[in-house]
Length: 208
Image (cartoon, rainbow, N blue to C red; front, side, top):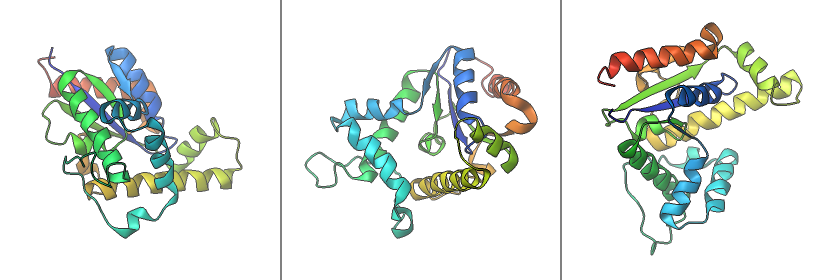
């Protein structure tokens, strides 16, 4: 069996993370999300806390409005002052994503993985979305907030994800042309989304 990597981008509250976990379990492959930061830390020698802190920092900064830094696969060497910069921390996570795509079948959540692996023939990219009301309902199960607070939280989270994606890729996060498959989880439900991804995978990669 050849390696098949499934990348999942998702709107907050759409259930994309849960769908990714269910998919990985059904396919009996590894699921990667925040674990990528630990792997990038091990590979680079950069303290994992810096990856975590950078992840939080960029959520509360105007970095994305200053200058775009599209990813092209480069790594900044340790002797550089920019070795632990936000851009290089992303570069190392991207390196791990590329290494995983060469080594194993897996499911990868977020991290612009669809773009990082856009030239890999063994990759299936998915975008999970849903109407606002459905996302609010899903988010309410995890957060104790008023409806207005929850809506602001979702809007802020999705805005960050869109800006993060555009900063590193130059593309629009919600543009369906960036993905092989876009699924509305409110219409299909989690199980059916998993089934549809597997069905598409079988058509796309019949040898597997």
